[in-house]
Length: 333
Image (tube, rainbow, N blue to C red; front, side, top):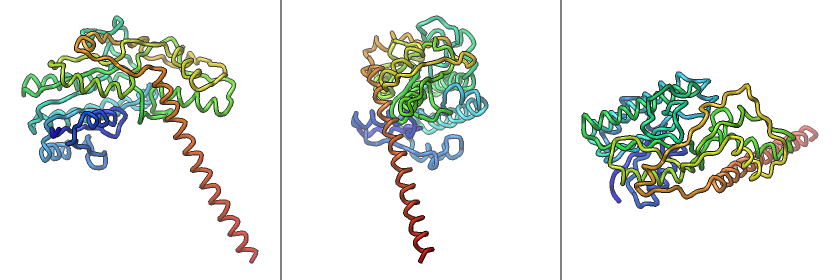
């Protein structure tokens, strides 16, 4: 397939999954730009790139993302940078004649206390969760902008709203990671160090819906083909688990036998986020990767990376020891 498709943010977890899915589907003409090649915060550079390349389809997967702590630490960055990215890419796409735009949102756009499971009609019926308000408001602005450009300029837009995501290329940095990858790291580390107990944030009662990013990528391509509307559409599995249930699942899969404690002074975030995916299922899509299978994949990915880092440190230490031996021998000579 020769359609020119620009995947903005292809190095991220979602963008990389989308590239894999597009390539598997036979798409050969993908536009991919690293941050050093194209800074999405630079309006002039984005405009010049889009005018030069004129992609037929744009998938906007570029965003500043992070968990509760990252959002609390840098709320201004989250709203400013996400607004800038969206403004630059969406406006440039429309002005260079892009036929179709896919704007990827997030389940955090919905009100903190809206009825569950969350229907698309719940959007803007109440205040969002305060711990990630900057990111949520930016995403609401982005989807509203995409719909406005459809209305004014006739650009075809689709706006899938994913649930919590995880999978390959997720961050295991505890300061930036989302809940599932953070728990995988903590439980693997606790198992490896034989830690007797592990203290986790919140009460463990908050409920979240998790979708493997490869399932999301397939869903996005499916929605772009079959959902003929600028209105938002929820993308998820339709099932949720409590954070406590997730923690015990990860403990079981890692083989961690210690005690799990909860620091109730820390925030839970939104009490529950489970999507009503009836619109998605009605057009024929269903996720394929179970949470247990996905968790096992994440444990394997983190363990591989951790062991690689340990091997590298050992090599550096061995090299340093050899240099010291040589220096001592030279001094003795």
